Image (tube, rainbow, N blue to C red; front, top):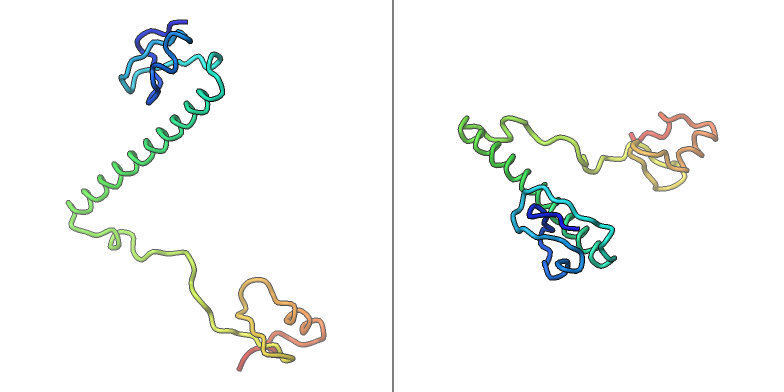
Length: 136
């Protein structure tokens, strides 16, 4: 099968395919290409997939770099910073919080965030109220 001059395998060595599989190579990137994968062995398929995945990652990186450059140019042209436009970064971890509750039977504490500890649940079950466990 001859695919013509528009067929190419990016980064592939033409010696791997030419002659045996009827592929025609053109090193021009960006042309439509068709590859008859039914004629490729496992090693060639793995190599093609690896190279295609690498190219997709590069395309994403290039696109992001272009967008960043446009944003930087616009911010510079307007004379403002990213922080001025979008404010302080939000989200993420807030850091440690002071404990709010103390176990009356021990030295354990709980901030009141997240899952209730067993000692807290046991104290509630025994008749204590949340306000009784508050650290004063």
